[in-house]
Length: 204
Image (cartoon, one colour):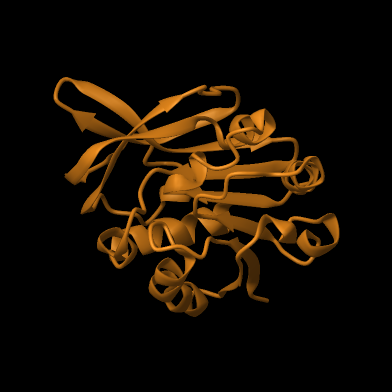
C-alpha cells in the first residue's frame, strides 16, 4: 500500500507549502508516497495523526499548543516517522520538546550560496541511493543541539569549518529525519533533494 504522509505546511510566500508541494508531490507519488497537505498545526491531533505513517513538516509556524505538542511527540514515540525540512527547525520556538525531538534549533545566517553538502554516513538507509548534489540554499547555524540518539548524515564545509546539515534521530519507537536543505525551488526541483526526501520518508 502507499505510504500515507501528512504534510504540515504554511500558506506564505517564503517557505510556503504550495511551491514545495508542486515540486515534490508528484515525484513522491510515483514512489508510492501519498502526501496530504494541511496548513495549520490544528491538524496535529491524535485522531488525525492515527491515519498516517509519517508527518512531513515545512514552514514557519510559530506556536504549538500543549495538546498539539503532546500529539506530535506521542505520534513519533509510538513508532511513526517525522521528516522535518529546512525551516521546520525554526518552528514552534516556545516548545522545548519539539526542539529536542528535531535535534536542534536553526538560525538563518547571511544570504546563502551554492554548495554541495558532504555525505558522511554513506551506509545509512536514509541516504542510500542519494548522490551529493549542488544547489543554492540558505546558510544556517544551529543552537540547542540534542546529540542524544542522533546520527549525522551530511555536513556542510565552510572554509575550515564544518556544520551539521542532515541527521536522523530515534525517539521512543519512532524515527526523526532532518535536513537544512529546502529554501526554495532551486533545491525543491533538484532530483537529488527529491531522492533525499523520498529516502527519508521510507526510512522514517
